Image (cartoon, rainbow, N blue to C red):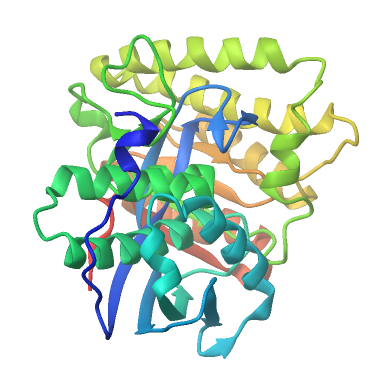
Amino acid sequence: MSEDSFVLHLNTAILSAGSVSWQSPSNIALVKYWGKHGEQLPQNASISFTLSNCHTTTILHYTQKESEGFEFEVYLDGQKEVGFEPKIASFFKRIEKYVPFITNYRFKIETSNSFPHSSGIASSASGMSALSLCIMDIERQLSPEMTESYFMQKASFLSRLGSGSACRSLEGPLIVWGAHQDISNSSDLYGTSYPYEVHSNFQEYQDTILLVDKGEKQVSSTVGHGLMHGHAFAKARFTQAHDNLVQLKEVLASGDLDAFIALVESEALTLHAMMMTSHPYFILMKPNTLEIINRIWEYRENTDSKVCFTLDAGANVHVLYPKKETKEIHLFIENELSKFCQNNHYINDSVGNGAKKL
């Protein structure tokens, strides 16, 4: 579908007041997107596991108003959060032509995360996707003939305009974002479900997030993506990501866990290498991040385990492993890795199937 297909030529129906609520998960990319162009469009295609336990719950209250422009308040865990307002205002400006009815209402946005905000667990992905689903829920009330497929596709499209990776959080278990010649129906405009058969080795995959640093990220993703403009290695990186997605397609079909490990860990380290070689440059890993990585490598070398790690643009470590290894890996994390987490805090999660209406 094209962008124009999401432009809303709405009937004159108006809802007086009400509220809608959605819960949307975070996601963890296996092949990373890093670098964008245009209006939130990716420089390369990416693919992610949708998570289950790490999610954002958003309640959107709406009341009809007569004044022009946007009116909203944001509450995080019951406390008014003015710091979120500029990002929401920017989001509303981007999506207004697709959902022009948002100027007809005064909104109260109540949101809460099941994980620490801004700790490298993609709270913007779960948060923006949950808000987009709430907005689309209102549009569906105004246009009851809307199909479910259009609802999800447009919600993903809107999510992308708030946070690129948010468009991968609506469905699951594997979501592709970015046009790729080898992935049918893939699009730069929204996330799509991975359309091919996946080997049983990757069913119900597990992800334990080790919270090395719960503080604000050293550099925002928006700034990080911007650093790819003029980056000396950007073109090679985009080509590498494209090729890795081709390789991962073969891995997901064959069930080759060793090839999966090599590709996923390489993608994580490449993401951080791009940040370390940008101008200005950043080292987003902490000493404990490196300690965890080395412990995982050592454990894998000494056992038959297929555990591996990946990273987002921060210090926290996502420990990925097949479901059949859950008991052993949980013991390994508790006994060996938890001491490198802030306050010994980690979150056991698993691959999930996407957002749900509450």
